[in-house]
Length: 210
View 1: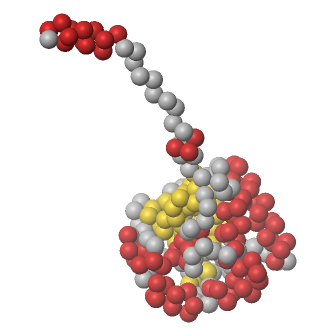
View 2: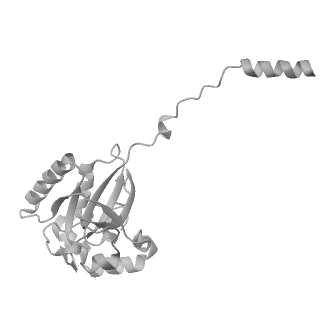
View 3: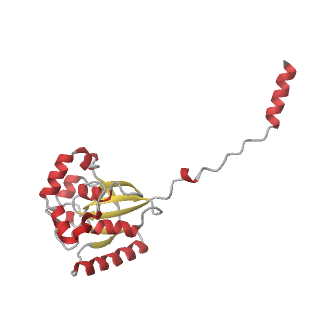
């Protein structure tokens, strides 16, 4: 028995170390990036992006102001300088920033400067928050194209990204948590009627959720 135990121990020591195979390509998650847009009610902007291939998550929150960790009550009262916004987490290998811009424009009224739809005030204005020179170039180019399409001025601003603060949890995925309230608000605000007037068949760019 002692001889057998010693033999087995030597065999284990002499055996080559197992080589770990590289992870399969399907197991490697592609890089994610973030894009931030303000387009009035963030509940509605969530549904503009949710469920599309390449988009990992859409978060409701606030951007454009100087204060850290603003609350919904503070922002909605217009006391912080923030705008209701959404942060889109996406895989650039699956959906491009240009495509995100297309979705964005066709879910807002870029001709309205005092808010969006029935929501008025600086906290509801539209804006594209750009993180670098490339995003700014693409955003400016798409804005010019939209102005030509609408044959008029586009007042949506293109601003440098300075930070994003998620809204309270009850605002996240509001359309799923409170579908009746969400749809009553959306219809009462006239959002879809105005989008149809502006964009016709491209209104909303056929959102996956509504």
